[in-house]
Length: 314
Image 1 (cartoon, rainbow, N blue to C red):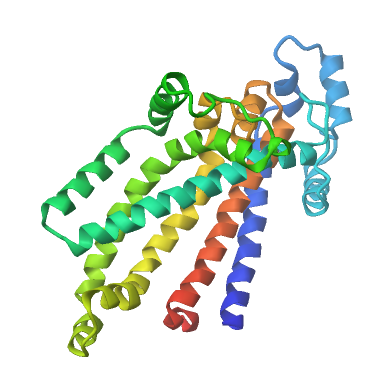
Image 2: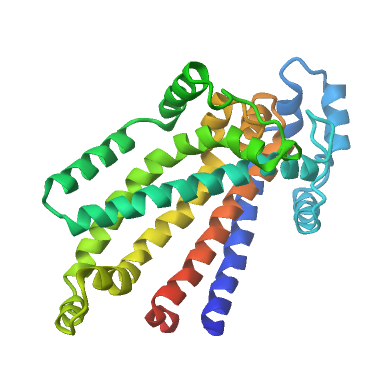
């Protein structure tokens, strides 16, 4: 297992390095002046030159890249042009909203999708199976922001059980923070739960055709023991892949939901930075989101090795 993890870790480092190069090239080296973009079309040449000097944009590209990588490794990302505060502190503050939101959404999605998928597979070609598939199709077809609006109208405006938006901060208490994140987490989780349910159903149905299921039943194991002890673990490999990718997608793609619920998270920070032409923050957020996807793929690979020992020798 150690050699398997080491090989995956070396691949992780190589992918992160390539990601950093691509992000830097796209945002700083391709035609266009980042300082001119930040200042707008009406800025004078003197103002653009001052901004270029302030943020080191007048240095050679190779030197800027080295300084940027050194800053990423040490946590010194410089200052935001718009907010005039350290970017590392800004990302850490907004991450306290987005990361718990994504984690809560993935937990809800898996708690809903996996049991429904197993239920549909266990009762394949019945009314239960059809009902689960219809619900999952609805979940896939309806955008998550529309779910969010319905949840606000129902549970915030009509019933008054949850706040309609905003985040009071974790200093107000754990329950207060979770209460403000629950509706947006449900809005994010429902489409993902539909994906998990359909994938779990397909994986379980495929596993049920394997010889080890007939062997387990021939040895006298009950249907429940066969499903939980043999089928479930063998069917989890594709589901684990989706769960890992979903967490990354939810962190990077929560921008719409965070704007619907007025949550001060990373997605809203990205939207605001793009709107205000804060290229420095955009660059750091892009590499953060891309790095998160790479790291989650690495963790998924390790989970593969734990679920299926045969993959460790691959």
